[in-house]
Length: 189
Image (cartoon, rainbow, N blue to C red):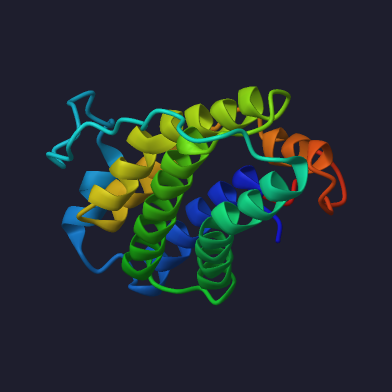
């Protein structure tokens, strides 16, 4: 299962354009909305601040850590695959927005579990880095989810800046002796 955020983001932006084209830009408000610059206003979601739990319990063995990592990554992998399928199937932007919400929920849970798990010493810093990378993308994912028009959705996608270290899952899998993707540029989560 590949998690290539840049590919997903490019595909989502394309999907927003296709979605706008599919409706023939029938809503003049969407066209005008798309032409306006994005606001710097804070998110209106009212979402509670996201915090990570403390690490608890005895340090896992390498085998236990490998199994735990696979369990933790499974939900996010399913959500990422569902989002990619929605993009491939040219689903409407509103459905893609819902799939992004599912992906964010899965990443939030992944971050909580990564932070709370007592990893081996060499894995813990990478698990923390992955949780932080997920959290750094949260505000951008929320803007996509909060989009009320195809124009807002498209702008949120264009503004999405994923400059996180995308090879972290690959590096964790290498340390835990798990199968990896084809390359660090396309890591298996």
